[in-house]
Every structure is written in structure tokens, then in C-alpha cells.
Image (cartoon, rainbow, N blue to C red):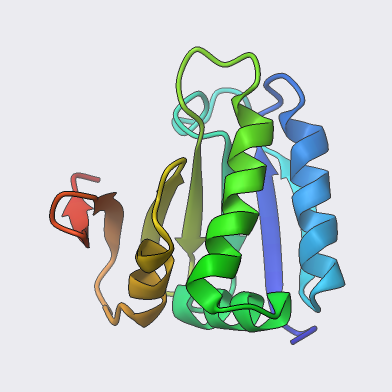
Length: 149
């Protein structure tokens, strides 16, 4: 697992840098090669997302490995982990924070927001797409949907 590289990108808003470092440390403790980076404030993503988890591996492999490493049912474990991170990021924000998991190998962006059910993480882990796409979970449909890029 240590060969799998992950960057946790933040935009320097509030204590996002501190949270990004904590996320990177948690990922390192689960065998990933992870680092926290500050993005340029003038990036188009700034303000839209709290953090971007940039993967050099496919998203399904990352979620599977992380979920298994957490030692619980994958969907439940990922739900709990991202729930804690989003709660920490939510303090002092006017909008709900969003974490983007970006699969750089395939061009897939999956938006993780508060309130996603454990099934959403299982479905994302099982999702097989080769096309670049931005995904958002639709709780009514109970599925990940492609949204405009």
C-alpha cells in the first residue's frame, strides 16, 4: 500500500490546513504515502471545496484499501471517517463543506458531502467508469450521478 500516493489539497481557509495535515497523517497511518498541500488561492476550485483528496490510484482501489484498513464494513468505516472530517471542516463556514476525491488517473471527481449514507461509499467503491466525470450522490435515486464539469 505504501506505494499509493495521495495528496490532500487545501485552500488555506480557516483551519483547513490543519485538517488537511490531520487527514494526511491518518492516511499515512493506514499505509498510504500522503502529504498535505496548499493550493493557490486563485484556483477555480478555491471556495467550492474544503479539501481535494488527489489520488494517483483509481478511486475504487483507494476506497477499498482504506475501508479494509479501517477494519470495519467498508461503507460504514468510510462513512464514519469522512463524517468526522466534514464535521471538523464545517465549523465557521457559511456553506456545507465538500471534499472532492479526485482520481487523477481517470479524471473522476467524486464530491463527498455531509450526510452521505454508508451505501454511497460502497456504490462509489464499486463504480466502474473509464470516462472522465464529475460525480455527486443523489439520495433520492440512491445512486451517483454525473454532473456538469
